[in-house]
Image (cartoon, rainbow, N blue to C red; front, side):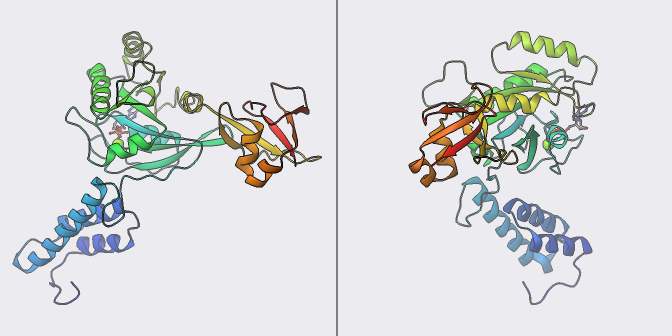
Length: 328
Ligand SMILES: Nc1nc2c(ncn2[C@@H]2O[C@H](COP(=O)(O)OP(=O)(O)O)[C@@H](O)[C@H]2O)c(=O)[nH]1
Ligand SMILES: [Mg+2]
C-alpha cells in the first residue's frame, strides 16, 4: 500500500488512517478501518485499497466474534478491574451510556439515536473506598445482539438491565432484555435455574426517572416483576437515585473489605483487601502472601463483630470493614 498511492485521497481519509496507526485496541482499529473505508473515494484507482480495507475489517471483526481469533484480539474482552464488574444490557436509547457516564469517568457516547455504542466502554464507579467496574455495551433488540458481546456478559459478575421508565414500551424492554439473555442461557438468580443455564446477578435499573410518568411506571414495573431482581429508578440528568446503584452492586457482589494492620501501627485504610463473604483470617493472610498464611500464628481484629483488638483464630470469619493484625 506504500507504492503508487492514488493522489486524490481526502484529508478525512488521511485522518482515519492516522487513527488506525494510533489505534491500540481492536475496537479502535475496527472503528478506524470503517472510517477509512467510508472516506475512501470509490473508483477504479482505489479498488485495491478498498479490497485491502475490507479484508482487514473482516479479520478484526472475525477475531472479535470468535473470542480470541487468530489475531489474538477480542474487541469485546474487557479486563476486570476493581471489586467486581457489571455490564449494561438494554434496548437502544435505554440510557445505558448516560448512566455509565454519570457513574464513572468513562468517555461514553450518549446520543439521541440508537446504536451509538459499538464496542464495550469500561469505567470505574466509586463506592465508598472501593471501585466497581461498569461496562457500557451496544444495545440488544428482539433480534439479538452484536456477535461477540455475549462473552463479555458471561464473564461479568453481574448485569444492570436498563429500561427507559418514560418509554411506552417499558415492559417490552424488560422482556426483550430477559429473553435475549435467556436465549443465551443467562437467567436471573432466584428463579429456578434451568439445566445448562447460568444464573447471573441482575439489577433492574429504571432510567430517565426525571421524565413525566416515570414514577408511576416504576411502581407498575415493581409490581409486575416483584422478586425478579433488585430495582432502582435513576436519572442521569438530575442524578436522582444514582447512589443506589453502587450500593446495590456492592451488596450483590457478596464481598467484604478488610484492612491489614501492623502491630502498633494504624491500619492501612488506603487499600482494602476484597474477599468473598465467608472468608476467614487465613484467607486474608493468603491474599497477602502464601508465606504469611503458612506461618500465621494468631490474629487480632478491630471491627463491628468483635471487641477492639479481640484475638481470633485462623478460622474466624471476617466482617466487612474489619481491621486485621496478623501475627506470624
Ligand atoms: N431526560 C433524560 N434523558 C436521558 C437520561 N439518560 C439518557 N437520556 C437520553 O436518552 C437518549 C439515549 O441515551 P443513551 O445513554 O445514549 O442510551 P443508550 O443507547 O442506552 O446508550 C439520549 O438522548 C440521552 O440524552 C436521563 O436520565 N434523563
Ligand atoms: Mg449507548
